[in-house]
Image (tube, rainbow, N blue to C red):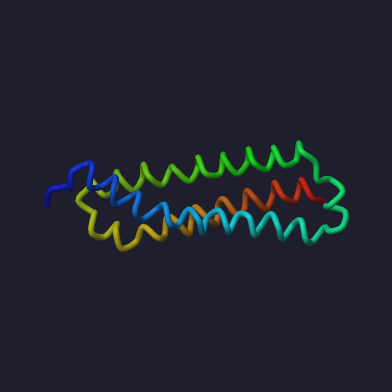
Length: 113
């Protein structure tokens, strides 16, 4: 079995991962908002421009980390395991979201407690 051309693999990766990026960001935002809500009203007192900038920076870094899925996806699509990979790449999404959610939990705990 021949691997698909790079352009086809990249297109398939973009079509798969970009819609999931919305769920990824919503999941991480839910973690942050939960911590904010659990520590309200004390958490309200630390709302500053600098906190906003920090949260923006962390959100950008989380999205840069999300892009690691592209490397794995395109590599796997180029292998002889492409058909199996396409059925089970959701496992990478769930694992990555869980990992990022745990990191977000610890950051949000430190910020809002």
